[in-house]
Structures are given as C-alpha cells and as structure tokens.
Length: 121
Image (cartoon, one colour):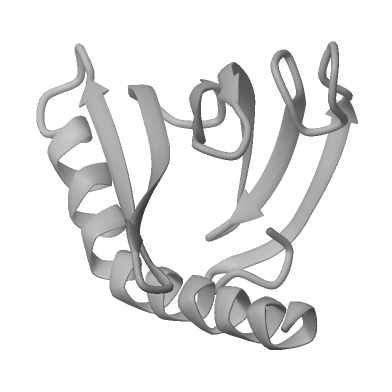
C-alpha cells in the first residue's frame, strides 16, 4: 500500500492469524498526514476481504474489497465503504475525500494487476 496514491507509508503492525495480511492483520497507513489503523475483519483469499478503521479518523469506517472473475481474463473489483459519525458532516467529508482519490487509486491498482499478469504469463 505504500506506493498507492496519497499514501506515504504503510506498515503491518500485527500479522494475521493464518496469513500475514489475512484475518486479524493490523496495518498503520499514513495518508494525508494521518496515521490510520485498519484491521482485517474478514479474509477470503482470493475473493476479497473486509477491514475496519480502528483509529485515526473521526468516523466509523467499514470497507470491503471483492474480486469476481467474469471470464475471458476480466475481473470485477467491487470496493464498498460504509461510514458513520456522531460529528456533523464528518462522514460526508471523509466520503468526499475517498471518492475524490478513488479513481487514481483504482487506476494504480489496475496497472499493478496488469503488470503482475504479464509477469505470470
């Protein structure tokens, strides 16, 4: 994640129970000057995972990323983020920031997947 757009640093502070980045893994991601702690709460390799932000944002944040093989070398990525907050407009502001950065992040992710596919094939 350290090379994702907007992320300046990422480190795994606790490995997952069965896989390094799997269920229970905790990561600290530095983005926009904030240290954001996220924990993997569901892990289903190779189909996807769910994570929650446990510290660093003024909102409750639950996210999931899922992959679906559509055949013919095409894969769909679905990324869902649910936000809530007791602070007025906090969730809306965070959602706006995520939405603004998402196209850049997804383009980066696509290039990485295509690069990996070329190495494998």
